[in-house]
Length: 189
Image (tube, rainbow, N blue to C red; front, side, top):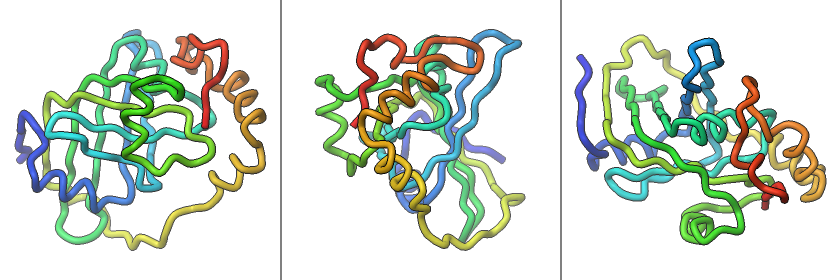
């Protein structure tokens, strides 16, 4: 049976900090549009307070999270235990996108190891925390982080990444604008 909390408790934070993988879910308001669910890793998630979290986001094949947050702000994070006792933890909240070069970026970036290809920090104010059993989640052994993203971004270089953002990250699958679509300069690190 699931349990609900109004904020991230110390045991939740401890569980989150041990996970190598988390999922981000967002959706546009139009029922005919596409729901987005993205796996994330690379030690990029941070708990800032009992109701505030964020993660460092990298240039990728799309930018659905940014578009959906710009439209309606809804965001859900999910963490699963793949080793040890079964557990699923969901964080429900209202998201925001923080772009490089802003005052907010300077404030949040201090919490992360900023790598080549960092395009934005997704933050969220959490209004509900849910835990559930996770009995059906299989056990997996963590083998390490992949190096492909760092290699790809280093090979593209800053100007190549800016061009890639212009080509692939200014609109969602459903043609919603992203935060980068608001900028003349595709801000990346």
